[in-house]
Image 1: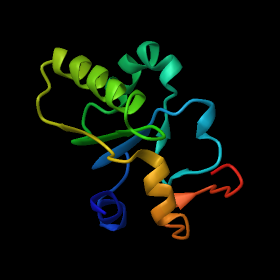
Image 2: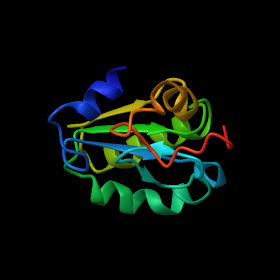
Image 3: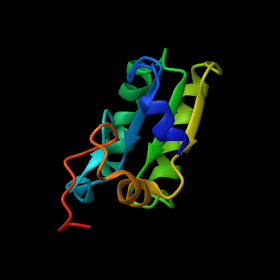
Image 4: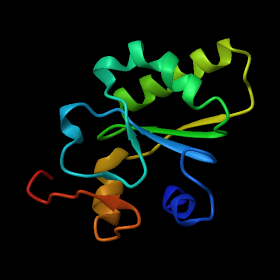
Length: 121
């Protein structure tokens, strides 16, 4: 619910916050609107670029399908990398329940979820 409120607020994606979806092939079938896909299989090699691109973004939200392994791991790697640059002026979160729970809850709201394919879920 907090993420849905954030997306529907006057906050601007890529400026005030960024949602990072680290699903790999399971990214197909729907995504949170405005999220960026950084597949977990390439995350270690892409994290430096992500940190550079988001150095001024104060809120970072990570998730995968369930947010039990890939999402939390990517969030930890991102935070460690960004902190190594001595940038403590940000918050990193993991979406509880992942896209599976968010998508099921908001699949009928085009402001929150796009590219939903029922057959995949």
